[in-house]
Image (tube, rainbow, N blue to C red):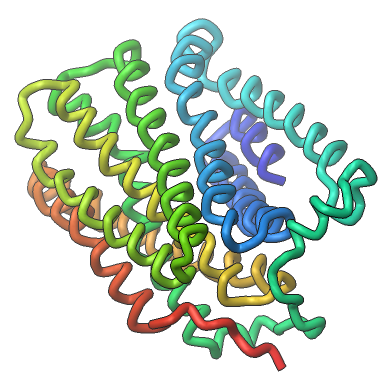
Length: 333
């Protein structure tokens, strides 16, 4: 559905058709991360899960690294429609590979008994599944969902408004965006892997999931704060470094936030909890888009926007901690 919606954007003949294609894209995209996090929870025990999530989260940025390099070239050479169609075809290739390759651990014949025992080393989940309405009644669900509500809009801010910020501040054009955006997304990838690795390393040293996840997220919250000063820097690459630090810290924070549903809920409920969080995060993203547009229209400045971005992660980790002080396992019985 995601690939279909994306490709249809290239065939849109007017604004309504383009918007309709984007709706289809959004419906498909919404299932990506819940499915990915569920797959991670199926293949990795708790002590390794944050690192695996960090790698998975970083993988989502590989396309973002490649896109600023190839899409402008395609657009200039063949037009914007072909940019959607060609990248959609690439997505279709990935989809075929996923359907062909992915299996649950017990469905993989080459997996040794020792490897399977390691994957399933966590305490067995209760067989009973948790319904959506019941999930909405848990504080733990809202610990994750409100964390997403707060941080997802900031990621979309970085994703969609960084080109505008660089263009207005450093007078970049379409041909010049590539290297700065690639650098930012490479830093984001490193942050995602480092954040997951840090949390998993703390757990392997004997710390609880609660301590490991939250200490890592708290450190990341402080690392985002320098984003406020990006607008006052005269040098392009210094500004890129500051933005890259913020996006890296976001991805590290996100890798740990993505992991806590699997810390608190049985595997059968993880995808649903991540889906709820994704929905709530999307609502926050819509609100942030309106806020950003309004502030830029009225002030022409990123001062307030970056102030919000720099402080949000500290608020997010506070909310997560208040709603789930111990990241306690939910009793599904």
